[in-house]
Image (cartoon, rainbow over all chains, first blue to last red; front, top):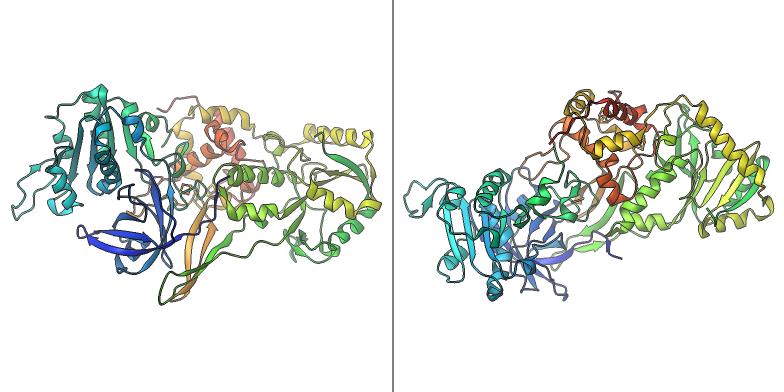
Length: 276
Length: 358
Ligand code: SF4
Ligand code: SF4
Ligand code: FES
């Protein structure tokens, strides 16, 4: 029987990379010798002793087993995120996990993949993208649509650059508002505006959608328009997950514990959630 | 029921039986009377402190297994290398004497939730394994807020879930032993017990039936409310009305022996030393679902009232926890400032004009 004792594993901060004004990415290396294995879409609870514990999705490749990468936004009310932002390379923090259900990427084999990420949703799908690129022959067309508020709000810019130049993935970006300096020569408009020109074989496509919740209804409508079924739209939901193992009660939506039953759900499942 | 052994303990031998519990290394937790008359469970050192002629305690003895605050671990940051993390010492054995059948049923819910539903909660499981329950059946409903007989598997005596149970029937105690833990207690009482007769067992059932027919307590009829809530066939106006009368004080869920939600907090003793604790939390409080961004998904008292009823009474959750989340102890009736304890909510739900929300 599986048992949770809530004791974090020690990890050392190996690298800190500022992404935007409010976001930083951290590489956390395990210091015990046990390999850390996970599947894309799973999350970890990260401990900063004295500040607490908070959930973060794993943004690094599942092929790497000695370290993980997380991207952390600093919020005024987020104690753990703020504390992480003050940490330095070489500091120790803690990790529990991997927790939750992954995207069932094996089930998507042989299909077209459409990944839609808004803002800070990109880290949550980055592990998927890296996994799919590692197993590229198992999938047909792979498309990434990424939308951010402004050019400066984009995270993982280096990756985006690489993917834009890659023959293995179609990567399209947009920003809601171009910056004043006028250096942005890409697409401007809400993420939904990227859908119109897309050639998609709807019934053959599985969508992976992560972003702010406000974007979901609009993206769902676009996907439905293209013929993608509710069963083939996958989301990763966010809640304030304090324990990550179905006990603290903080993450419930309707009849589901996001931490235990999710965080990955299909749109068909979300429609059955019975929530307020 | 097959492997429950039944004996008789003469009433005048009860004190002697209780006194012998102190021969065991276990801590004995029992109901005691506070100076102003309230009953509360606490560790005792002699039979003289124990009060077994009582209604039920406002604070459930379930607190001995799920304390309102417990240490998850202690930490010491170090100059170099990873911090030292020290798990709490394993819990000592304890006997809860005098726990009522509703609270025994609540512990069965908690066992399903914390242990059976994986992953098991290590802290709960450790304390639970060290706990022996000596239940005290109710000769009749002990308070006019009780409605255990409206609840799943409820009744004036526990059918399962106890280690030992004492039922006062016609001036003597029917003693039941259900487990090995209970057997250990019974060995202490060997010379005080005689085999139970068919008469006393039947007399207890007759006594329970009579009490149920005579009772005038709140009528919860959970089954009907369960059907409505599961089908989501409750007019949203009901939740608005309940939310209107709710002060979001959290009292109902803090006292509810079935409620499990907790918060996790780090307490710093000094710059590099502290503890991580978990504390009872309440889904009725405004900020319960607050996220790091400040967004609060369930931000109205009505949405939280709906959620509370749904989590306790919908079949969707029954499937996950194998029990409904109310045992009819009546504590939420006693504490609620808005007079919207569980039976009142069930009544409103039953009477609500069926209307599919979605
Ligand atoms: S909901 Fe109320 S009556 Fe039911 S178990 Fe909880 S406190 Fe007792
Ligand atoms: S005890 Fe009553 S007023 Fe307080 S939170 Fe519960 S329902 Fe609301
Ligand atoms: S995060 Fe604690 S129950 Fe889901």
